[in-house]
Image 1 (cartoon, rainbow, N blue to C red):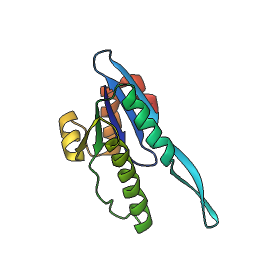
Image 2: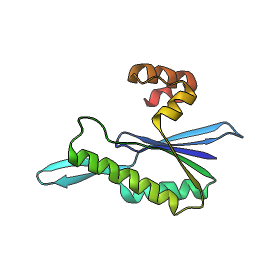
Image 3: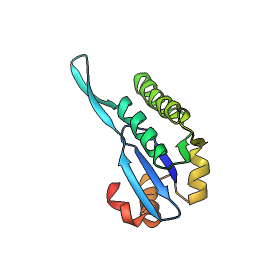
Image 4: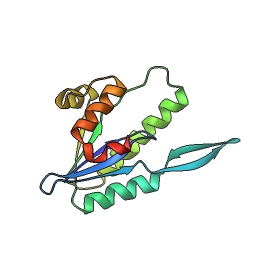
Length: 136
């Protein structure tokens, strides 16, 4: 089985079994945390690690995680939190026997013919994965 992770707060964890054609998508585990007077959504660290370990134990042999960089216009705290989340995901995978593959957006989008425009990318995702188009 193959696993892929979109590491943001609104990301997801997907698992595909090429032999059976089975495909499952799990929303990124998030929690609410009080930061000062504000309650914010944050990655649920324990749930992410547990999900990666559980899915690896269930048969995922290879994990693909986007090799991300900074996002133009993102705040320093936002960039830190996003980078922390990516590091958490990579570290969790590294604790398992599965192989980790870091793939640049240019590489995977080029291979799958996914345009940069978000709406066009969603349309392409619908073409590739019509059975789960309700998830975007």
